[in-house]
Amino acid sequence: MDFDFSDYSLILENNEDFDIKGPGGFESFHQVKAINDTALSTYENALFAMMLQLTQPRYNNVIGYFHTWKSINWTGSRSFEIKLTEILGKVVINHQDFPGGSYITKSFTNENVTEKKIKIIRQARTEDPRLSDVQHTYDIINQACESREDNRVAQRVRLYNYGANRGCDINEINDLVKIKIQETLTLFEINVDDDGAEKIFCALLDKIDNNVIRKHINIGNNNESPITFNEILFILRDEKVRDTDVSFLASRFKLHFVNVFEEYLSDDDLCDAEDAASYFNKSSNLNQAMEYLLNLRAIELWEHFKKFNPHLSLEEGRAIDMAFRTNMDDLRMYLFRIFTRICKTKLVHHSDKNSILYKKGNKTYLPTTIGTITKKSIVLGVMRNSHAISSLYEINALVSGCDNVAEINSFDNEYSRLSEVSLDAYYTNESPDIREKVNEIGKNIQLINTRTAMDEINNV
Image (cartoon, rainbow, N blue to C red; front, side, top):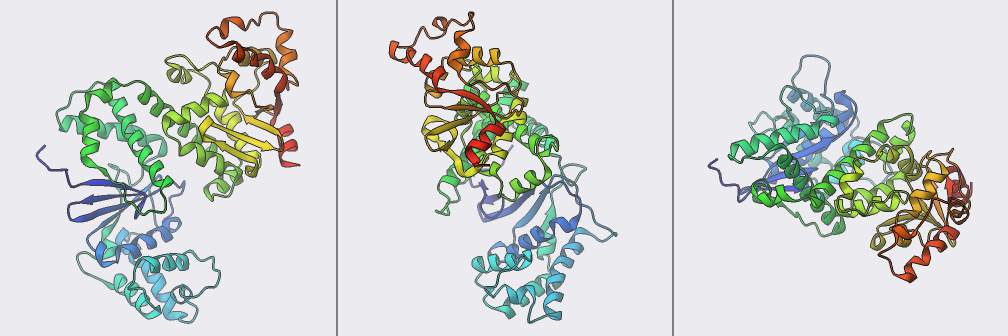
């Protein structure tokens, strides 16, 4: 393919969810809406915000793409461009009819408002010096509404077309990306088998993931932090990417973790609609824990996952691969429910120890994926996991998300009565002082269910 990509880049979380920048500046803005709704009215404010942004002279040649989960529909036979013009027209007419209390006028006041369009105009004022007063703001929006120029804003905002559809289901997006990877490999005459293509897919996810994490860490510096197209092409061409295992498996694990979390949010039997709505509004107990976890690098998330599973030994060379054979449903059934129910103010993230804990006073609680397995299996699993020596030494209670779990008041009493438990074989590589901690762990920790934890932590 004879095209110079050297001056092109992908920029995440900048003007929109992602932007494409070329040698002459920004070429397209892309906003993604994972909303389970097909009505155009649901997206009206987001479309208004994008159009207002694209009226700025520096963006007068930028195309705005709107990506949705469900195909957007509207009544009547009018085109999408006309429907966009009508959205602008609502703001214009609102000001003409109520000039003293219009969206535009109120955007120049300090009063508390709930109307989203007022908030959008206020935000736009901080980015566009032309919106200096009520009249100028009205003139700009009115001009955008009435414009018939070739680069008019209503013509430059478009629904992204996924083949025959105007939307792409969340469950299908990964497969679609993999198809596009294969098409690109074919275009560049790069021969890769299915396993290699999967590793390229995960390497690209890791590249994006790390970029977003760095932006969140340096959130105040307004750095674009671009991913150049040449970096993306290098991943496609680099044979070493197809030979890696650990980074590939870690990226695949994080992808699976995210998918399981999305399944939890959409499962009414596990996650109440009210809790899911609170999460999307960034106001639930779940937000803080998941913000920590989803912003971790893939390999760091894996280290945290090991802590959440003290009853599983995940230390072998291909332990990440083995994790895919474990029951990942325990994340949905137990761990995410703990994060939803227990007060976020008691949550503590120890990034240096790869752990998320709940604390109250001198007592420390570890959320786990432990479910309805028998007491014997739990005890055997924890004590056979040599990783538990360091990760559980300071833990007072393991929290199970299952209300009906058989609680254990003393691991020490439980495993001492199980004659088949012999710890020697599991700690042969550990120093004597570390091995002495094994019994201390058993004396120090107990297993409790979510209700007990909530009573102790939340003072319910």
